[in-house]
Image 1 (cartoon, rainbow, N blue to C red):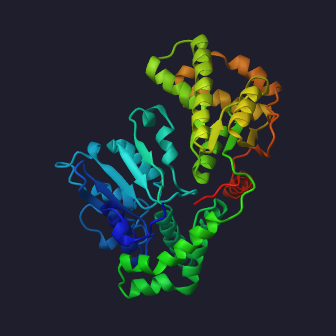
Image 2 (tube, rainbow, N blue to C red):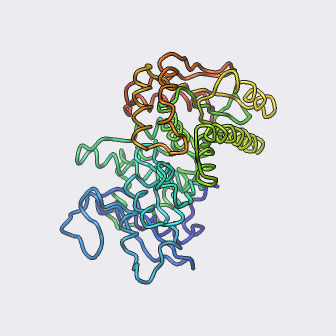
Image 3 (tube, rainbow, N blue to C red):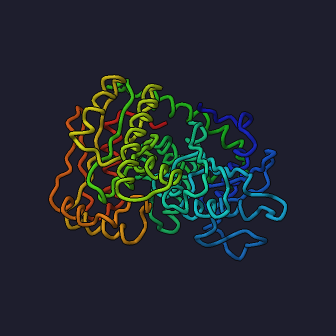
Length: 421
């Protein structure tokens, strides 16, 4: 759905956009948020106020520093004595960052809805990053209105470029463009013409801004949708490689930025641990086999519905190639592999560190089989599978910087032939 008609938007999204436009007019990032209670009433609202004058602070609002995010201000605006935040929904015009995801979890907000993806600071995947974060289920609803997402992206691109000009802050615009987000070009155009700045000076309402931009957003989305594709079936992004090679982190990030559902063997395996408990290495292996079966069954269900998917695991050629080939034959899907690897000593050092630190789920019992994994990580190879389709090799010996990640994202996005709208 690609609505950018103010009258057709629900009240929470209107509030988010009003707050975002107020933030823009005040010289900050155009991001707004709203908290809605169980009866559908807006009970809290807030805007990004990072770049406002901190001397203007009043009440509970955070102003003039790096904590002054829209979601934080919306949550602080609640009267927590009268409103049970555990029954509320948080709406926000841009995917929450790590700070705001942490606040959402600490307050046990059960659901968060965001209008647009943020490939640079967006951190919704942190809801699954640790046992603590997973201990209270929080539903994250990704963008589903292409027009609303495109509007938010255009506003934020213009806003970021304005801040680059004013303060010399790091630009995220190239990364958003590499991720294929809609209307980045429109945001650049608006910055060049000064049109939004003029509308803000004239005290135009956000409804008037939307009316002005709607035809251009519609045209941009239509152009994006009309881009030719060489493959019409669903796509499978396979993220594989050695244990401790960083494939889970990279897989989640790529899936989010490409708009793909992300499923992994370990997510299923750890859910089994949380539900059924855990014991020794033998039990961990049984849970791993079950996790693999759940991975393939879930992928089949998504592909049957024509939905592309990102699958992550340390796929083994001898065991997984036949199962993946069967998916390809059954659903006519295209495979793109991202193979993560690093040198043996680096892999083992990471594996040992995470096993001893407890950052992995204890059900994996990695600390009970360090010697086994030491030999394997130092000697085994972790190649791509024998499947038709592109292969992107990623050396994770050194931490990926932003430029390297954007290059990987662009290469994968180009080979997937996906519309990013």
